[in-house]
Image (cartoon, rainbow, N blue to C red; front, side, top):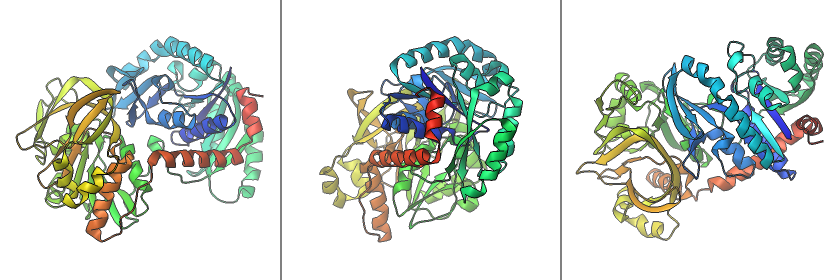
Length: 509
C-alpha cells in the first residue's frame, strides 16, 4: 500500500499545508488519496456531516483530496482547556477531560484502534498522506508516541522531514532532529524538505550539499514562502494588529480563542482588514467588532473584565456593530451558569448583559451541521434596514455552518432570535439560533463558519461600506476560491519538489 508521512523539525514548519499540497497533486494525477493525522491538538475544529468533531487541518486536506471530511482522517483530537488540561475527543466524540500526564499515560490504549482503522483506510485508497505532530525529536514522549515515529513504525510508513528556514537555523534543526532519533527511525527518513524559503535558491545549494553529506539523507526540494487564501496551521497563524484596508474589522484575541477560522472568509474581501485586539491600546475604532469562540468562556470573560476590555466592548456596543460567535455570543448575554463545573469551579458569572439571553453549560456537547436563514423580516431589517429587505429576499439567503458548544442559551423577554435553523445534520427542523438587539447592531450566534456563507458576509460588509461611503461589491464564493487556491498550492509544491523522488518514497513507482 502506498503511503508517505510528513514530519517536521518543530511545530508550525508547514506540515499541514504540505500534506494538503501532496493530496491535491496525487488527486490531480489520478490517484484516490486520503489525508491522515492520528492525533491533532487544536482549538480549531469542525463538525462532519454525521455530527462528529475533527480538526480543521484535516478538513482542508480532505477538500484537497476531493473528499468530504470524515473523522477517520483525524481519530484523536485534543482541545486544550488550560495550560495543563485538555478535552480528549476520540472518533469525533468526547472521550474524557484529562491532564497532560493522564493523557500521556493513556495514549498506548489507542494504538490498536489506530492500527485497525489505518488498515481499513488502506483498503479504500491508492495512497495515504500522513501528517505528524510537533517533532519526532521530542525524546521525552517517544516511549508512548502515536503520532510521529511511533505511528510511522505502527503503520510502516516512510518519512519526509520538513524544516522551516524562515525561522532560521534550518540546517541545525534538520541535523539535530536526525541526531536525536534512533538508528531504526533514521532509516525511515527518506528525504528532507526545506520550507518557506525567501530569496535566491542558488545561494542555498552549498548548504543543501553540506547537510546531505552530514545526515546522509537527500533533500527533495525547497518550497518558497508564499501567501494563499488557505487556513494556516494553528501555531502558524499571524494575529495581526495593523489596519491594512479601508474597512477595519477587529477580533478580540481571547486567551482560549477557538475556531478563529471563522473569520478567514472576511480576509478575501479586497477592502477589508482583519486585525486582533489583545489589550486596551489595540482597540481603536473598528467598523465591526467580533467576539470569537472560546474553549473556556468564563475564564476569557474574566480576562476581558480584569484588563478593561469588557468596558470598552460595552461602550463600543452602544452605537457600533458587534457580533459574538459561540463563546463570544454567550459572553454578550446576561449570565453564564456552570452547574456541573464544565469549565471552572464557578457556578455562575454575570456576563456583559448586551443581549437578553442566559446560558447554562450542560454535560453533553452540541455538535451539528446546520442550514439557517434570518429568523424573520424583522431580524434582518433591524440589521440592514428596510431598504435592503427586497434585495435580500430576491437572493439565496441561507447560511451554512456548524455548532460546537456545551452551553444552551435561553431567551429573556427582550430577546429576539437572529436565525432560524432549517436543518440539523441534514434533518429538517425549525429552531431559533442566536439573538439580535432592538437596534440591530449587536448580534450573537452559535453558528461557526457564518462568514463562509457569501450571503451573510456580503450583506454585513456592504452595510459597513454604505456607512463609510464606499461602493458596494459582490463577495466571492469562499468554496470556489479555496479550490483555486488549492490548485495554486499544488502548482507551487509540484515545481519545488523532486516529484519523482516523492513518488518513489510513497511507493507509487
